[in-house]
Image 1: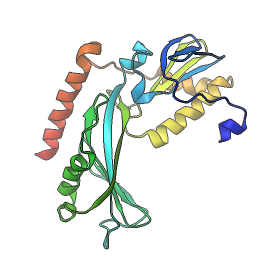
Image 2: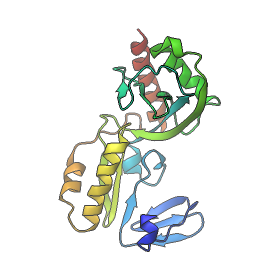
Image 3: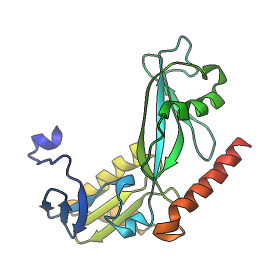
Image 4: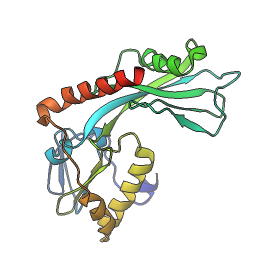
Length: 225
């Protein structure tokens, strides 16, 4: 609403298939601008090989139970465990437990998201293993090798930030502010973040996904031991 009120033209359902400088080509036309911001996170795809080699899509899932008579955690507190493949949860204002856990790779979602997350919930709160679930959903985020986000100048007027590794509420908000500063001509803080070393995933574009699955499965096994 704020963007529309400022006169911004928004074109929904316009998938970008390629970028050339500050021109974005979509499957329905093209947009030419003074600045182009690549803010696709886990959906970068083939738009930038430089970014894609450092950012891996990963799906995570959340359930919300029906309102509970005795929620296991006080309202206003968010919790997470110490696992490598982390679970996280909080109580909603109407006494539901909102619990996130379980992951998959690429862009395929499990057929039954609630069942996937319920297994993780049961390990943390066995007495809630059969709690009725009212909502289940998921989304594609992006992780990096060292969990630091990837900031990049991809050309004159082309800015990219992605790979928030599960901390996007804070880090993506910061990235938006730094990119806004850069577009306005004050790129110092953006360039500092871009100067941090960012390793690529081993295995190149063909092997990085299976190698990541292997590594994450190993850490998940360690979590269970």
